[in-house]
Image 1 (cartoon, one colour):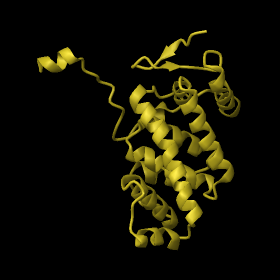
Image 2: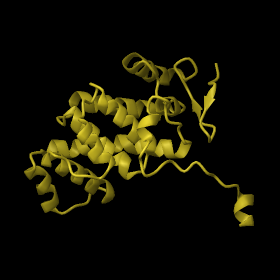
Image 3: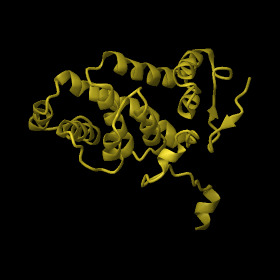
Length: 209
């Protein structure tokens, strides 16, 4: 069976009935846990390697990371915000409001609006996350020590990298495919200072300019 929905760039948005068998397990997991298959998962399903890598990494973080669930969501929201991924920021805001991640409204607003957290430990976590992401892991020993002095561990420093890796997969896929925001997330995209660039130009148009 072929999918009925596509992104603006003609990437199919699968559900379990239209995806390859290797993607169906993950799509069924989303359906069972959230009552819906998010458009992101439906897009990733075209590549079972990508969908399963993303899905398994997220589940590994939830099961094995010593970062708390709210901290995981702060890291991932911070990466998505820095990458200007409207889909993922709105999605992580939605899941942050749920028991799934359990963030406070203040925590999510701090990420979305580039404001300080009330909890200084979360400021250190976001600062470290963005440092790792923007410098590709390179930093002074003193910068790592600042993260450790805030109450985090070397294990958690590596868990931050896992969180960043998960958002590289989802943010980049959304920007490439122009994944439409799910109706449930759409109100949470309001007020964000960016959106995916959905205007494409043909070579003929560019030549005429």
